[in-house]
Length: 237
Image 1 (cartoon, rainbow, N blue to C red):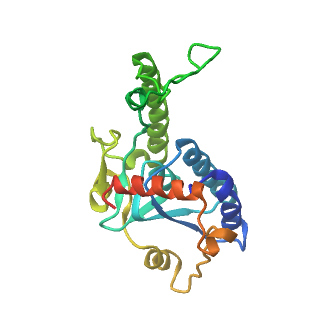
Image 2 (cartoon, rainbow, N blue to C red; image 1 turned 30 degrees about the vertical axis):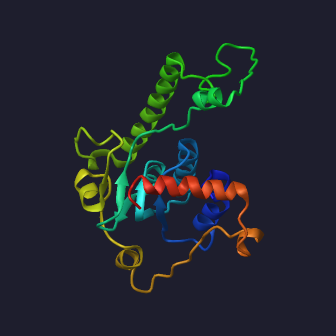
């Protein structure tokens, strides 16, 4: 199931407000997703952290890339395993074009619109250069917002590297040297180091729905799982 601000809001509210926590730890394993949802979730984390004066620590498992790194950047510090994949600070739009397939099958596409841009990027029509140019402008604007957030959150810790915002990604130790993350550490040992051996961890996670608990996956969930699998595969995972 894809992450969303609506879905995570109750968990985040509990994590920051229940029992007056000394800190909140984010355990992140995400290859990315919706940039808007990443922005909304990160903004909620920062708002709660600032309101409650609670430090936030992010711990990366296999990957914090693209939207996953956006979430990690909302923390005050980011910790990784040496093999964690970090970065991919970019924006992507992917799809398929099927006009040749339709033509071969003798299928005629009929679309009627009011407004010349209403059928922009229709996958059943030949690609239009003007549509592609407009999409690239939108992606660049979104990318600029992503870069601005990372710079705001990481500040002087970021190194001046020309590949930093190209969509490139790195393993944990290289990410440390670039200033994308703060160091190599795992959640429990690091939290004990910061807050003492008697630190008590209270996990919060999304509950499975009725169908999922009995091993039944609906078609929409199956498609989401396939898409998520494809995103992880981009990083060799």
